[in-house]
Amino acid sequence: MDDIVRISTNTRWEPVFGYSRAVKAGNLIVVSGTTATDESGAVIGVNQMYSQARQAIANIASALARAGAGLSDVIRTRIFVTDITRFQEVARAHSEAFGAAPPASSMVEVRRLVHPDMMIEIEADALIRTANKPTAAAMPAAPAKPRAVTKPKGRTTGAARSKPPRRK
Image (cartoon, rainbow, N blue to C red):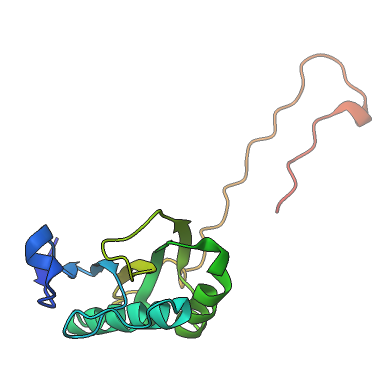
């Protein structure tokens, strides 16, 4: 792999826990669990799940930009919420941000997060596509190799002969 680049946002949690906001390894960018905080570390949108989801996604977008990527490069999100009954609020913010290029995603309810006012934490994985290399999705599928047809042993009538497999 290419060099590993560690991206820090200098939030108060990074040195305490010992992590980077994002790590870029080759074309892969992995963004740590991101919450709804502003530049000073204050929680945005207390008791507002939608606002917190939007802020967390904005913070992810900022980390991705520093790594040379954007939200359209995100291939997976993992969402941790303290109240899954508020799924629709999170889904609305996620859909607004990723609707044009929806990533694989999951949402899990957790008992609590590191700060009592935090309601959501989102992780994101992104893949920077290279302009001159086609992605697997853009490449045509290889044609299936025909399977050999085996004939049954012994005498058979026309109806009992094995038939070649149907192509899908």
